[in-house]
Each structure stands twice: as C-alpha cells, then as structure tokens.
Length: 193
Length: 225
Image (tube, each protein chain N blue to C red):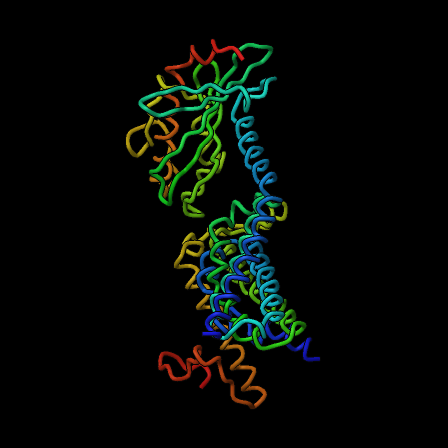
C-alpha cells in the first residue's frame, strides 16, 4: 500500500512540475509566435500585391460565396483601389493541404502567388514554391483569357514535370479564389476603409 | 578522464546512427538536406542534455516501477519547450522541421540514454553522455543529409547563404525520397564496416562489427572474411 502510494505521489509531482513549466514557457512564447505568424502572412500579402501605400493586412473585406467565407486584403495607392490579395487552400495536394496567397490587380489579373505552406515531396512537388519553375506561370492571367487547368488536362498552366498532382492542386485553388475575387471586384474596389 | 571518455564515445565508437542504429525514424525522415539534419540534430541534442540532467538528478527518487512514464513526461516537457521556443524565435527553422519536433519524444536515443545511462550515472557523466550522444547523432544526420542532398539535389544549401553546387551533375531525385534514405544509410553502414575490416586486417586483429550489423554470417559477399 505504502509503496503504491509513493508511486502515485512521485508521478503526480513530476507531472505537476512539468505542467507548471510548460505554462510558463507557453506564456513567454505566445506573443512572439503570434507576431511571427502575423509577420509571415503580412510579408506574403505585400509580396503578391501591386505597390501600395496602405496596410492591406488591416484593410480587410469578407465575402461570402457558396457558404464559404473568403477574406480579401485590399491594397490602395493614394486612396485608389489597386488590387486585392486572398488566401486559398487546396486539399488536393500530394502530401496534405497547400495554402497559397494570391495577389490580384485592379484589372482582375493575377499579380503574383506565394505558397504559404505545403507538405509536397521535396525535389518534386515542392517545386511549386519556385518562382521561375512554377509560380511565375500565373502572373498576368485573368479568369476570362485563360484555360484554368494544367497543360496535361488541356489548360494553359504548364505543370511541373513529374509533379502534375501538386501543380493541378495549386491551379484549381487559385482559380477557385480568383472566381470569387473577379465576381466581387466592384464591391472590393468600392469598399471604403 | 572518464568525462572525456563518455563525451567522445558518442561520436564514433557508440555513434547513435552508425553504431547503435537507433532513432532511424527521424534519421531517415529529415535527412533530405544538410540544413534539416543540423536543425534536427541540435534540437535533439538540447532535449537529450536536458533530460539526462533531470533524470540523473532525480535517479534515486524515481521508483523503478514508474520510471518509464517519468522519463517520458520529462522528455515530452523538454520537447514541447523546444517546439514553442523554436516557433517563437526561429520561425523559419520551425517551418521546415515542424513535423519532426514532436517525433523527438519517441526518439529511442533519448529514452535509451535516460534508461541505460542517466538513470545509473552521476550528473556530470550524464551531461557528458548527453553532449556526446547528441553531437554524434547530429554528425550522423549531417553525413547522411549531405550524401543525400549532393546526390539527390546536386547542391548543398545551408541557411540560404552558403550554397555549393556540383557542376554538370543531373540530380537523382530518388535519393531525397524515402527509398534514398534507406539506400544511403545502407551504403554508409556497409562502407564503414568494410573500412574497419580492412584496417583490422592490416593491424592483424579481427574486426567485430556491432552485434546487429554483423554481416560475416551472410554469404552474399566476402567482406570481413
């Protein structure tokens, strides 16, 4: 009896100390983690948008489309609408979700895209991160003048060799967001901060 | 002297990857590049030293019957601390290692050292063991990572600034995929056994490979015979 009581006490003691220690560390790191996440997203937004003089991370418009809520980050220069950015997620990747930040100009053409996170295979699907090999293929395209599919499926976007699934996932995700963005362009442009 | 002995044994004589062949899950998963290998190695070293210190200090207080749960709680606590600190202060590294950090909890090197060494030896020897084993693990991962990155990507990139490319080499993508990990590890282990067998022959002694890597009973080749 005494022995099993000792086991319980020691294990409880160790777990309580561990719990307390973790609470302290969590407290200390919560703010830096949040800041790092926000900075990462803010940087991606600025990279995909045309030149602007407002803070798009705080100039936010929410749009409801087919039961999904899309968040648009609006860019302005001297008060005039110059473009919007949005985050789109694909669950059709080869290794899990792919999150992409897409920037659209006021004319409705893709300014640039950035891959926020992915779990694609290094050396194959991971090339979706590469500007020259893949991301640049989206620049300047709009919803009307482009066949939104990879070349293998008869579209205009050249897929990465040996990584059709990853390329297809990105292409579809960008198109889904661009559809919503184009349809709501006037609302986005008309929105005053 | 004993301190020094415990420190250096992890580097070669009892190298966790090449001699003990422990911790294969992270070893094969993260060694697609030198950068990931170094990051994983250093994170595991930190956890290993911390857990060795705590377990060695409390080795007489922890009852034998609940020692494994106690070790796991200590290790899991330090892993979570590393995870949180890395996420807050080295966000980039955390992005590339994110998935593997929680795996350190079940890394058998850390539990293995807690059970086989720290729970039976005084503090300063346990620290030496932690540093040595950690560095040995990092060294093993880096050698494996460098081999795979050179063959599989044709270049080595460390923290974006140091980049070294093999000119005119067409990368073998297989080497940075999962099978490449097994192939690279197998070739490195085989090569090391072969070199040691040759060295032993020159000295006139008999080479004894680690128990589970003894290929002398195998009939496929004549190494070590």
